[in-house]
Image (cartoon, rainbow, N blue to C red; front, side, top):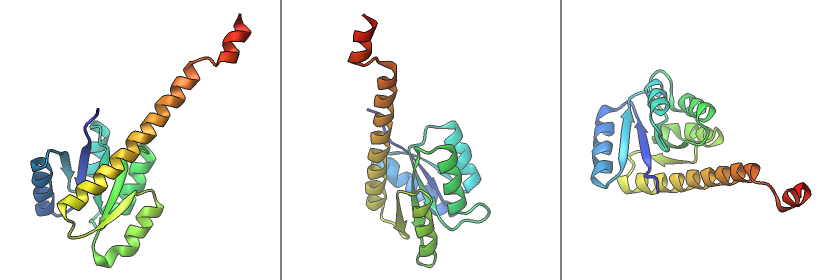
Length: 148
């Protein structure tokens, strides 16, 4: 079974380093990015399953980053991370394809729980895609009978 790989995106370096250490301590593989552009580059070169994405960042904000992630990598699940002042942005994120959102400061166990749920959803979608591809490759019983 594939192990979940997370990407934590936030412009606060201290939050990134602390969260990465806590996730590693609990056995999770996480990488970090300090901007939306850096996040997109890391997703491009690594197989990222779940992104924990801060809404409020300079430059490309969380919602713009989310839309680009969903456009380029539709199976990548995104959880928005927001402070009280940006609740409307989190709701916009849900409308744009985020699976969930967390309020800052987020507890590491809550981050893990939401990430696990998102990873399970992604695995379910990947399984449906595999089954559909197999069905397309395989002949139905009626097709086999018609050939004989």
